[in-house]
Length: 471
Image 1 (cartoon, helix red, strand yellow):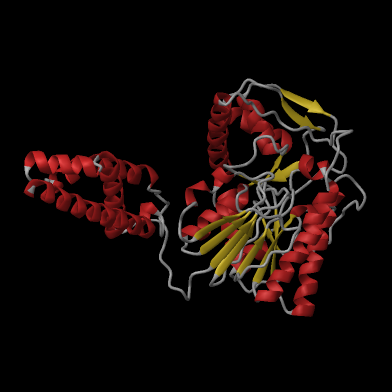
Image 2: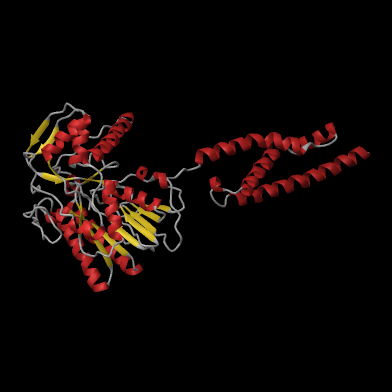
């Protein structure tokens, strides 16, 4: 009789205990979901451990099992059973922590006064950096249009490592998430899918507006979209700068000089551009974008900076974007003929991407509101450049001459005296050193893409016929 009463008492006590334990488990679960598990405090980890423990007890050791254990052994050894169940779970938690902990490149600590909030955007435009980039860089939030592209991702790296808050905005038409994936999850970094042709409403301090296609095959493929990106996209960014009082840097281009009749090209040269030729959508689009910047500066008081960027190369370039560096390196690595359009006597000046990024940041933070050339004054013919890449790759490829592209500039060399004097800037990376880095990157890309059953081919310099275009 007494044993039955005792059994009923124990049963009631354990039912209450189980209810209490389940209640604690629910509270612990609610507490644990606040915040990222990787960054949890020790108390939160303890809470989730208790939650898992109690659920495990509820499933594996129901009331009848507990009663049977009490009857057989005289008392329930809760501590030992808890350890037995929880230890494997603790091991799994430690494994998860190791696998999800993100290691970021070193970042400086800046005070609130000095730290900038930066937004990086990418649109369906294409840049010489394969992305449209917009970035703000003066104490607060920085906006980069095209931050996941070639130049934009390198600019994002520099701004992040300098301690600023960066928001990358990109529609991933030509850019790639893996260019900036090493920053995803960092407290100073945010990634947004957006096209600058649509208005953007954010709070920023500086805007690096790099949005636009830059590769001839890309901007000729959809000239209307190219024009929209350079005109409507620029208007949207200038409107944003006006609303929030931000400074805007426009990534213009050496193409505003067209096929120049003055050599080298200085900032006061007005250019020689065919307004209705196949390259006009890009050339004139950038010229209009510059006009818009100075109209907003004079009428609305918006602070603007204009960088006229000459040929740039380096890691994270698109291998099949159709430009001379990527074409030659890709063809040399694959043992294919290096295609030279025309006689190869056209000249170009190539700068490494890190030099350009340093120039953009210096210009943004300067008091220079007039256009500034950013490029390497070391001039080479296209034929010399093809032979240099052949030599550096160690390729046996032949050089194949094709008919010259329409309106292809015959000479291109920047006069950078203004940048030297007013920004204390000039390129420092030797051409061969930069090319070796680019070749190493492209070789790795070929290996990666070969493993994924895809080998990129260089794009032709001419527009493809009969293809539907989307505006």
